[in-house]
Length: 501
Ligand SMILES: Nc1nc2c(ncn2[C@@H]2O[C@H](COP(=O)(O)OP(=O)(O)OP(=O)(O)O)[C@@H](O)[C@H]2O)c(=O)[nH]1
Ligand SMILES: [Mg+2]
Image (cartoon, rainbow, N blue to C red; front, side, top):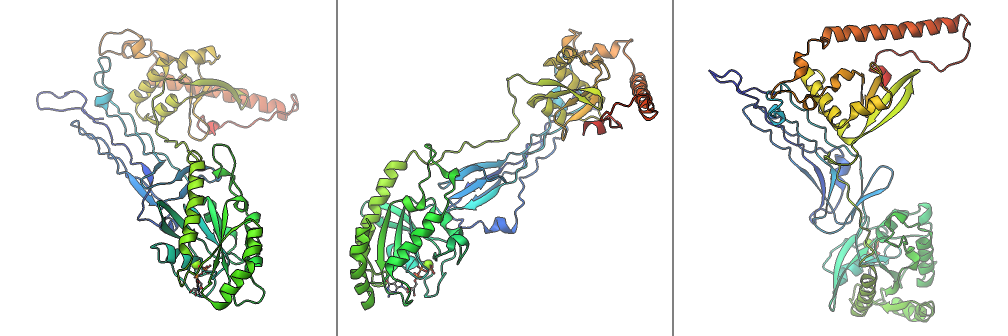
């Protein structure tokens, strides 16, 4: 609130400008970002504050938008696990929390009828949201298999990716992504950490990592033909991995438009018999091929180390990818992104419900506009409170309260119990300046001699309160002395503010 002051013009009109809006918090897919680690370390993020407006018509600057970069394939969920956004593709954005609305300076409130408002509208706080970020790799094909089967080696041999390869189990802890070009088709392949039997019961690295496989349309079983472990061979390995895939419960929230998620063990699958460069390896591959084909798998003998058989495997993978892409172009879940910015709406602007509290009626006003207007009101400024009353009257709140049976002094709550304000209804304030048809720049209420002064009002209010307290005390006495024994759930009402909770 500011009034322009010049040497010979002490009241030069209102010149308080508006405050800046708060900055949004936006989540954006950034190809340079590969992990969510920084959010693990510092989970609280905040958009920039808007600057307050100043006098001399100087608006406050808007707060800075905070961009939170996340890897492709990040899923944004709420605390309950509902998907809010599915971040696929570089540049995809989601407004996690919209910034607040700047206040309105008194220059902006001024009108023909209200030439020098002595108040400003407060800003509306920005949104706050608790979200869970989850990263699921987005790949066309996943390589699954035991630890050390050669999954990472295969990615390294088929793409430009250079994942860590070593001969100890669980070398891979975070899936590696590689881009494979096979003929005309370009697709991404992810290796995932090795699986072992019992992963669904939490063995090894557990089932955690099958989450990464969920979004892949097809799988390749990488089977180690030269395992040194006596109890393992490609066939039993395959069965063990299949059992783990079957035990994995897919996340139904990823269902396409048809509501169906294909279980992992029903997705198209190929078999790559790896390490056939080893003498034992090629023998073993020969040995199990017919059996695998008998089970319906297409089988490819490869060596990640000697780089043999990779072309054929690549073409077969490309075929699966092409097929899957054809089928699922429209299947990617399109999540509607809610942006929580307060906005003016034209719908029925409010509702009024009569409730009962502490044996007294309470009228609850709910609606986007009234609730926002209350937030914008500086209750220490009478003029601002009057403006609120005018706004409420203008959309018919007063009329509706009358119709709902409200009487002067009844409790009226605007908003819910947590954020609402409660006040004793003073219908006198219904006399909105705009409705009176008064002379320009004048508010008849200021001239109405019969209008009670604030002191009078306070007194009236106090009298009403005392009367109510006396009635209550009377009731209490009767109850205690046994005149009236009916049990009533009766709580002592302290102050009007407390009774709103
Ligand atoms: N001889 C031979 N060795 C291979 C071949 N492919 C992989 N290896 C070796 O097998 C070991 C494991 O390879 P990785 O690629 O790390 O296996 P992985 O499946 O990614 O293993 P995890 O990440 O632990 O699940 C390494 O020592 C590789 O050099 C192959 O075709 N032939
Ligand atoms: Mg690996």
